[in-house]
Length: 88
Image (cartoon, rainbow, N blue to C red; front, top):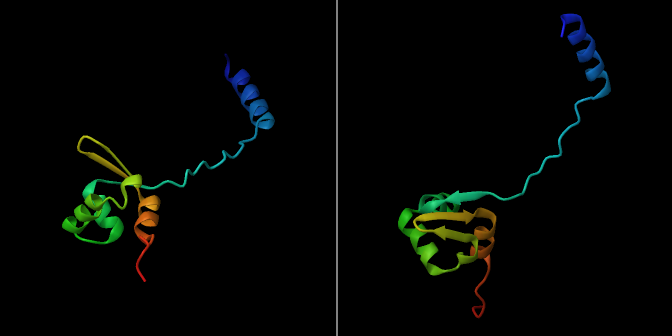
């Protein structure tokens, strides 16, 4: 391909196909990792974060494989904020 052919093709290609904006695929999910991530999410100490995890209140937000802990931040905050019922 000669330089002239390249310039011809690039001009015609740029005229025909304009850059189409890609749709933003924000899943809306934010994850935190480990006990340290839980502590930062709730703004508490590591022992308190460990107690929160062990309490079972945020179990639906936690995925744990071996020692690796992945927490859906939004769901964890929602679950922790729910009233447990029975108390006035």
